[in-house]
Amino acid sequence: NAGVTQTPKFQVLKTGQSMTLQCAQDMNHEYMSWYRQDPGMGLRLIHYSVGAGITDQGEVPNGYNVSRSTTEDFPLRLLSAAPSQTSVYFCASRTQMDGYTFGSGTRLTVV
Amino acid sequence: TQLLEQSPQFLSIQEGENLTVYCNSSSVFSSLQWYRQEPGEGPVLLVTVVTGGEVKKLKRLTFQFGDARKDSSLHITAAQPGDTGLYLCAGHLNDYKLSFGAGTTVTVRA
Image 1: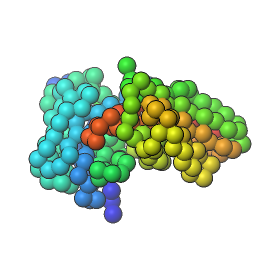
Image 2 (image 1 turned 90 degrees about the vertical axis):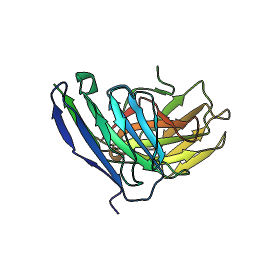
Image 3 (image 1 turned 135 degrees about the horizontal axis):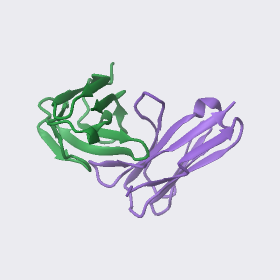
């Protein structure tokens, strides 16, 4: 049982490049979310999904897109990377009644 | 501004001492969770509290949810170096969104 798997673990992008952060869970969880973590600011919600085909915006959605075509996968797309998107990104999943299970994160640097 | 305010931001204590971390808000939460995060890893759920006034114990950790469901505290008795980490509180305003505090970095010196 792998839990929540995020790839890649590290990534360096140039300003203006696009990329997709991958997230997969094997626990059949309905709810999935993407958070970014910056020093002194805790975890801020980017986008979330309550089931396949359903997504919604969180606190800081600008510059990011998501899709949920299957229960297992919830990729996060950076459309045109900016230095302000330098952060550690966490994907998490849960059932309706439980707490989140987090992946180990993707550390992204935009230069 | 954070919906959930945690204090203190940093806490450094000697092994064997007790510590308390606070999580406060002006909003009412349907439930509140505490997570612990180690460097290079994602947060790990410690506890969920749901009922106002609820107290939960997890070995040397005691979690309390305020009567009005706006605040919570985490108390660690006889802290050990293995308790070192970033402690995060998080609250459900509704069923879908979980908002996090900025965290308290706890260092327990041997």
